[in-house]
Length: 139
Image (cartoon, rainbow, N blue to C red; front, side):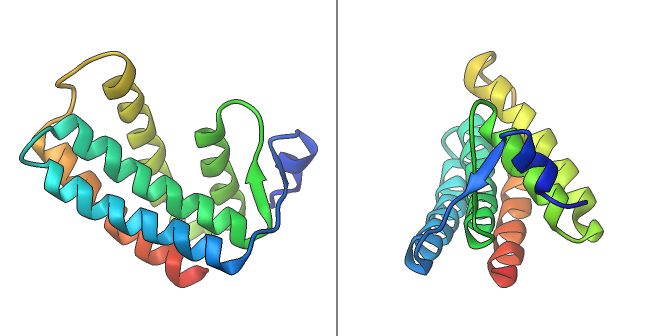
C-alpha cells in the first residue's frame, strides 16, 4: 500500500521541514519515553499517555522525513494510517499495538481515571522505546 490514497482523500499534505526539526521531534520522543518511565511511580494513566505520545512523535517525524504531514481531524489516526501505508508489512503488529494504545490513551485522557494497569503502562513504555528507536533508524 502507498500513501497516495491518503493524499487524494485530503488526510495528508506535502510538507518539507529541515532535518533539524525531524531530529528535534525524535528528541521529544526520547524525552517522553524517559518521562513516562518516571511517571510509573506517580500516575500509570499518564505514564501510558506520555509513552504513546513518544511513539506518535516518532511517527510524525517519519512522516516529515517522507515529506508529509497530517491534515484535518483525527491526526493521530492519520499518522498511524500513513505508517501502515509506508512501512514494511513486518510492522503490522507494532502498528496494531500503537492503534490499541491510541484508543486506551483516549479513554484515559477523556473518560476514565485509573484505566491503566501497571502491566499496561510498563509494556507501553517498553513498546514506545523500541518503536522510537526503530523509526529513528529508518529516518
